[in-house]
Image (cartoon, rainbow, N blue to C red; front, top):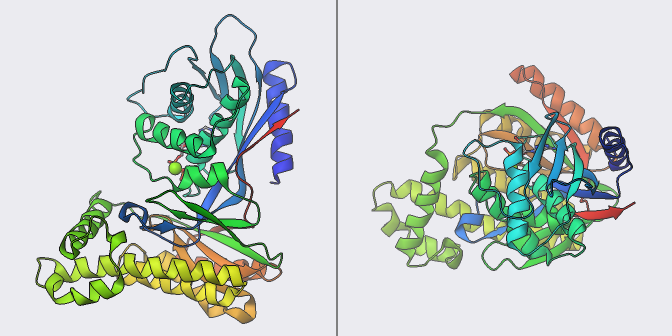
Length: 396
Ligand code: ADP
Ligand code: MG
């Protein structure tokens, strides 16, 4: 669906529910991470871009005595009311209202004073599909609260308040990437984000002949729950052995210098490989950014393949299905318009991201899908996107 169509649908749903036309449309995109995976908790770099999939809230002032905000979610076909005079407390049971209510509450805490408002939330970001529908919802709500308050806040503050809402109201200890890119993405650009300093750079990915293909393996392997914490503690242990606060402060030369010391530790071989993923990923991310700046897409693509291999062999967060998607993409190769591919997100299933030629991408996606389905019996889903703009408000 195009964003124009989604906005038109949001206007109609709003008008049908509230009997008037909306005065605001708050729009915020989902995202995909191009490279820089499992790096944020080590203080490293991530490299997301906003995608052409959005949460849209059609809204207007609420003129009754409640003094509250009223929002309707089309996907859940449910409404929720949210206090504006004081912060709602988090509810132990997490639902879509937690994301909305948390964002409203954290916006109040930041000093925004919205007039009562009502709205209808629509979205074409798949929920729970690893494209951050949650951040796009939070950032859309924050954008709407700004509109109803008659003022905007610094977009970094806005992203941070949305992250806080996700931490405190959805109990999800997420990093900062999703809210940053949804709030501050730039059309035709990806965002090189330093997760430690929060400094960011817009890097052009604006060649009209280059697109990003997102393929969902439609597999999510059940985890024991220890996979992510164990990798985090392996990285923390490596940092400790290297004598740095965060692995970010080390480099591959320091790691190689300490290799025998690390190997002597319990689980030393594994700790070494975990650290090697992070430190080489930092280097790949920097090279990937340089390649994009030069418009050298084959070079950028090679960093993606290498990144996938590192996630597979050193970090061990891929799975046979995402590995297969990458192999199939690599087999098509440059002559079929594929520059490079890697898994994206936390791993153990989920989606892959492929840099591809615009004209050849749909045929490549169809061939990858057909072969993937043949070999796994699972139908993948895919779409093509270019880097989209971050959150914005349309006043009707
Ligand atoms: P992801 O962010 O990867 O899509 P999450 O589990 O973090 O997955 O967030 C998904 C949750 O966000 C949904 O279960 C729902 O509670 C909320 N959400 C996202 N989009 C919407 C929407 N359009 N309407 C209501 N709730 C939404
Ligand atoms: Mg999320």
